[in-house]
Length: 314
Image (cartoon, rainbow, N blue to C red; front, top):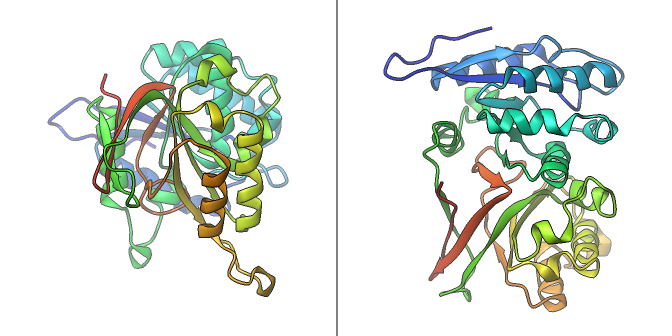
């Protein structure tokens, strides 16, 4: 479907596609498309976005063809409808040069969760940058009773698509006043990053050394989060970064055996394992309100009191 953009400026083309998990409720994709249209986007739903094959949004051939089709069309924004699982199956077969050419033509490959696999591999194979941020179902399909569309999520996306977003800010813990770091901004879903370590689809050490790494996850108990974070420490990935930014880690259930162990315990353990500054509070993850962040752009982190700023400019 297409929606007329605001007359004040040219339409920003946006294609919704499903490279991973199956869309359970098709009307929600159409609702997201209408809401994105109201924000000024000329929205197209890819022909295979609602395909189904087992737990996937179509079989591997269908989803691979959709990615290449969108790369050829090079819309301003290529937004995943949802995460789930499925991109790992495609990484060996995606034409990364074709995607890089779409980036050179202005396409923002946008999503989070399982989409982190595409971000990592695109940068590993071509050095091209992408964008971590909202997806159709998570941020633009919620009912009004559920809170509708978050203004920050929508605002960040719009500014990024117009080439106006140069920085984001958030409140972090005390103790980092005056911190200043520069490096490659990259990251995404913790479980997806860990799953790619040691493969050719993970960015090479020289690509991300001295970077600013951001992480989030969902449905993972704190001990699993700690295990994954320590894997990145012990693999020498975190230890080569200038800073680690932690977003939201949501939808886990404490168990009696925890005896007080939780996310705070995880953060303290990771800080004890590395000298790299570990900041919390980044508004990013499986939550209604999340910022849009580059993956693969040079950035600067500055902390003033408890106010943290990440800026990348143009």
